[in-house]
Image (cartoon, rainbow, N blue to C red; front, side, top):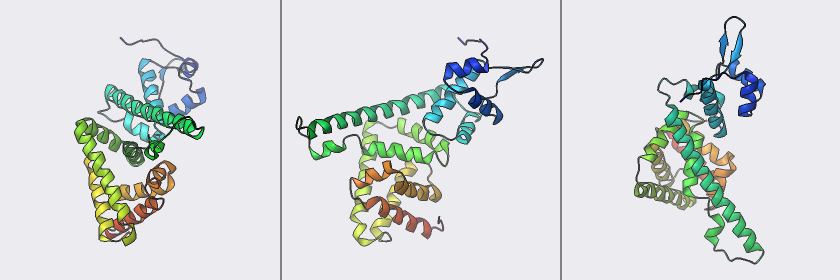
Length: 255
């Protein structure tokens, strides 16, 4: 089943589209160490090395840092097949969202040319609450990649009805936060919305106050996050961040 052919660093570089310099760097930091022949210190890579490099490239595609990748691959219970299944689901979701966004672009162009009518909600097809949930999992990996794995495992165990209910609940929380804006970030209503939102995140992984604060900051810094909230109210991302800071400060966590 496994090809035992030995590959030189140049052969692996050509095969994977990764520079020799990058492979040397991965060797230096202990991320991908080639086998060596003692007599001449000749380096070669086996099928196991090839599969490991594939994992590195998959995680890099999902914007994991090299330190995070090393932490994942060096886990004693790392399961290659499980990791590949997670990559498959993540890429399928990304492909689906991109196809929807491409359709939205095409429809909007046709609309602007007078060739097609569109309803207002159709302008935002593809910018879904489910996409926002994916962004939040992406943000979580910046603190601990294992949070993403745990989130994926819990999500896959849900029925479609349970998934729909969770997404609907998330929408309700965001709208409650919007309605609390006139009362201020420290209002009972705003703080209840933040509490409900944190509890929902806890369904997927244990969200510390530090992670919660970091997520709030990302809503201000990442245009993808902010665009989702701007669809509801252009002030909402900033208001949510302020409400999160109030929530965390009351629990002794500040920036």
